[in-house]
Length: 349
Image (tube, rainbow, N blue to C red):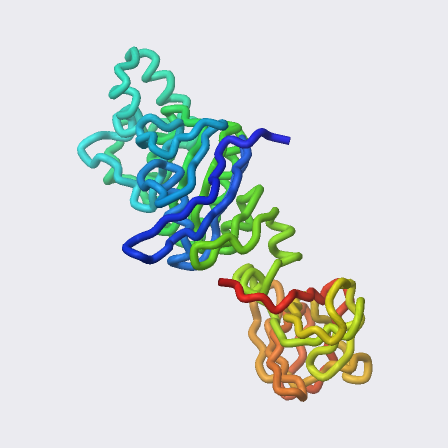
């Protein structure tokens, strides 16, 4: 298991009486690609800025390899940051933009050339040394910004929504490129995004945040398949979230029907949230399942159809299936016990 490179201990950040972070406790492992994910205002960028030294916590402390760096200024921390706005120097060419930090350190010219060449190769910009940054595409400018941060050999790279300004196709390509770079360099990447797909694609670990608190920490698979509460389930991908009652261990009632499930440890007749992913609902004939309804809309999504099915209790289900059922058709909906996720009724804030 990798050692902890960064730890946040009881970190609170207050802005004029409003708590942006409410007692965050978190550790980040060496060589990990970790993503802070959540809606605007959840505290993810504030957390990143605290790690980078651009902000100081109101209370609590930040450790780097076990040493308290809470009051250490940004330039003395072993981290570099890539922002959404790349902040490249327009009067410098690609080479000089990347070399800027090395020249500040007054390194030997030959060593600078060697390090910059290595970075250009890493970000697939060989031959661009003399190009003006204004002549580059958005994706190429982003690569220059990453190379400029990495050339200083930080132990941790902070990335604050660096793909937000790119179009969809380029953003997807750069997601894979960033993951490749991180694996090749073997350093810690701390990434901030509100894009669930981006987080699932790149991360080793995802930290889901809301209203200054951590809702769940886990692998992409854990976050998606085993959300801790209704907020996480709703934020990570599409979900059907419905009120239910846990009748007893392994048996739940929702949408007017009783179902087997794999959950236990709830109180008898305890009110719960039931989560079912759209892709986990199998369309069958109405006689094959106690849960059935009328197809109200069908949208072709390329690899599947997305259907809205209104059941007889007034709930609208989202169903993803490679088999299309025409509008106004009555269908049954089969859900395997393992695909029914039960969560306690706990506020997500």
